[in-house]
Image 1 (cartoon, rainbow, N blue to C red):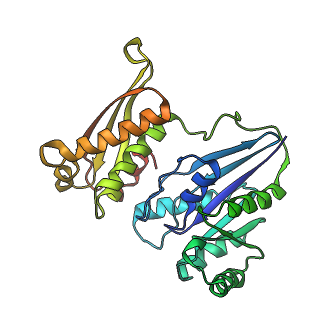
Image 2 (tube, helix red, strand yellow):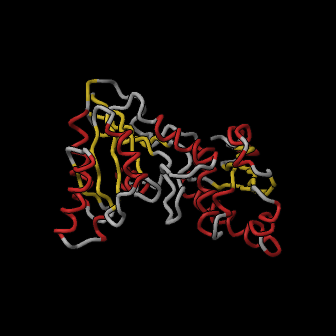
Amino acid sequence: MKTCFVSIIGLPNSGKSTMLNNILDYDLSIVSYKPQTTRDQINGIYSEEDFQIVFVDTPGFQNNNSLFSKVLNKNSISSLDDIDLVLFLHPVNRKIDSTTTELAKKVLKTKNKIAILTKIDLEDNNEILAQKAQELKQLGFDLVLGFSEKYQVSKQDLLEEIKKYLYESENYFDTEFLTDRPMRFLAKEIIRKHLLLNIKEEIPHQVAIVINDFIENYEEKEQIYITSTIYVAKKSHIPIVIGKNGAMLEKIGKASRLELEDKLGQKVILKNKVKESQNWLKDTKLIKKMGY
C-alpha cells in the first residue's frame, strides 16, 4: 500500500472545496460564491485498491487584520507542517496581488508544491490560459496544472501527478471513510451551509454553530436527534436569522434536515435555536469555544 498527505491552500473563492468535492465525488466541503466559506481544516480521504491520498482542505488565506481572520490564516499555514505535497490554487479570473504573493512565498518554502490554475472553464482563449500559467511560474512554481470541475480529464491529470508523491505505508484510514471528521461536525457544516445560502450580506460570516446533542438510535428507533445553537455576534441579527414568525429558521432547519437525512440514510430530528454571543469574533477565548 502507498499513501500521501496533500494540503489544498489558496485565497478565498479559489476553488479549494470544489476541487476536493470533485475528487471525492462527494459534497464534503461547503461550496459557496461567498468568501470565507471554509473555516475548518477538513480532511478528505481518497482511496483506491493500492493507495490512499488524504487531502487537507484549508480556510482561505486573507489579507484581513481581524482577530478571526488571523486565526484562520494561522490554521491554513499550520496545515503545511509535515505535509507531503502542497497544492496552491489560483483561479484564472483573478489577478495576482500582494496577498497571493505573500501566500505563495510561504508555500514555496515547502519541499513539494504544485500550482493549480482553477476555474479554467471560464477562459476559452488558450493564449490567456498560457499567460496565466506563466504568471504562476514567475512566482516560483516549476509545475502548473489546470483544473475545472467541468473537465474530467483535469481531475485525472491531477491525480496522476499526485501519485508520484506516494510512499510505502499502510492506510491511515479505513477505505470506506471519506473524512476523519465525526458526523456532528458535518451536521454543523450543513447547517452553516444553509445559513450561507439563505441569509445575505455579512451575517452568516458572523455566525458560529455549536452542536449540543447528536444522539443516534434516538428513543430506540433508527433516527438521529440533533440540537444546535446558532450564535450571532449582534442582538440585531437574531430576528434576521429567525425571520418573520420563525420562517427563516424553519427554512434553514428543513433544508439542513433533508440534506442530513440524505447523507446519513436515516430519519433526522433537528432542533435549532439562536442566541447572541456578543462580539465573539473579537474574543480569543470565545473563538476557541466555538471550535476554531
